Image (tube, rainbow, N blue to C red; front, top):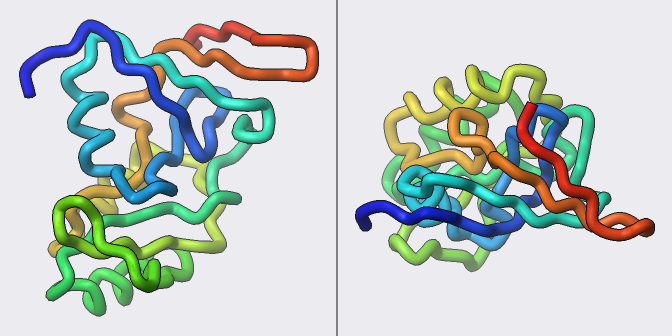
Length: 148
């Protein structure tokens, strides 16, 4: 994939700095690739997805099946409680560990740490590549917010 002028997608959670958890549907690696080549990233979400601190929604981590147990141990030591997403295989033939019990105050650091674990394909934290614009559906209509 080369370059895209605009990428429009949703998020499972988004914080005040526009860092996001994505990948609840399991396509986090492909979403990361598309976000990386996009000139502008527009996130569309309803008000329930906006949080002060990321982590209420389980953090998806795509892993190579052979390394799943090792990655799960490392994630447990690093940040939370990983659980295998049962009966699910990604478009890339991998598995998802959903990490529960998080309170992510430094999403960039955590994204980098998890991505350094051998066996991790990628993590559903979009902190290095954040949304540029958030269109937030509220009871009063659509709120348009630009990245701080």
